[in-house]
Amino acid sequence: MKTYDVMSVDIVCAKKDATIVEVATRIVLGIFNGIPIINDDGTVIGIITRIDILRAIKDGKDINNTPIEDIMTVNPIVIKQNIDIEETIGIMDKNGISMIPVVEDDGRIIGICSRSDILKEILNERFVVIGRKKTATTTIGEG
Image (cartoon, rainbow, N blue to C red):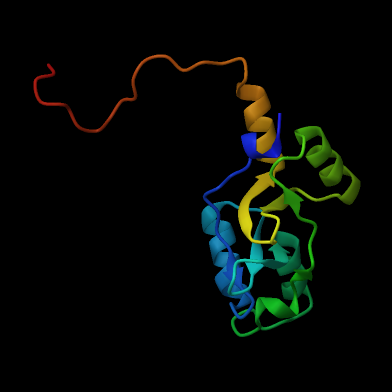
């Protein structure tokens, strides 16, 4: 299995001039562990996580006005989409990280691979959903 098999492609990124409170709000509302920080061409230049935000609060930073550039981890670990998932797990384990931006050869972000993404894929391999989804509306002609 490759990283592209499990990575999330619907991702939220931020620019370095966003404030801590703006990013924290997106993290909490989106139920993310962190958000990649990108420059204008989509290259990953940093990452901010829940613990970075908690440290900023602990340190008394003004989260309403402090740009995330002041607290983000610069030059974070990134991976390519075609590496084996076992290697991705090894990188996460060795570095104690829960998510890794997935990038093209030129450094532009194309996805995120998180511990949850990997577990969901592995745990769902033996299950199949059969039937149709229930909806709030009824199709014309159905009883």
